[in-house]
Length: 300
Ligand code: DGT
Ligand code: MG
Ligand code: MG
Ligand code: MG
Ligand code: MG
Image (tube, rainbow, N blue to C red; front, side):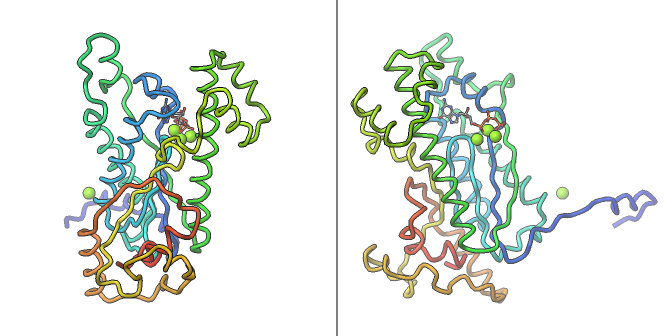
């Protein structure tokens, strides 16, 4: 590499290295999606096309970065979890965050037409879903390190509880407005001080809506993760949720012992082969995790 007298400016660059031996979570969030969702006419409170688009973009990211074991999405945000012992980009924070954000954004834009097919209708309806430069979707991103499995689980539970609370509120709010004919101000007033059971009751008694029958994608958010065929995983047991539920989720699979290069290559290859799936399930309770020990150990 040629040296020049200008090269010293490199010394001004500073890399922030994310704490070793911690789970790295990169959370991306749509910028100004309040405005963007109304500009493109997203359905309220949930637009399945928009949520599907988020899930497809997240799947691209998970496929492109094998070190990501699981991702959780709700509304205009997605959290990507990198395995604890990842050495991706030498754990350089900027490089990791910007790569995740730009990969997500590129995929989001690329898949837009797939998820918002051009409507046959002409006029405002068709215009509403055509992506244009007046309102390009962009995302911000941040990385946070979680030093214990419990902290990581609590982080993900926090996001899923948030999904539940917001969705119950939004579902009730928009029922009052759209079906109950209330103004938005009146609906907001009406819901002030109500707890979950009050909202469930409003939905049921006034609109005949059983909240528990609302789509799982709305109530639980979306989980994108690598699902392995368990045939050569003697330790995980291939059958029966019941048989596994009794296991201690804390069994010591999350070792941080260094692994050989050969082992690491094998794991990388297995990850690339794994099926990346999207589900709308409970990730707060232990069951999901007990059934998928590789999500904790990072080792398929
Ligand atoms: P930010 O993140 O500070 O740049 O600002 P926003 O506007 O993105 O705010 P945020 O992220 O707190 O809230 C997400 C917004 O996205 C919220 O206004 C609702 C909207 N949104 C997300 N998913 C849907 C959807 O499926 N349908 C509709 N109608 N709106 C949605
Ligand atoms: Mg925000
Ligand atoms: Mg946002
Ligand atoms: Mg948001
Ligand atoms: Mg370069």
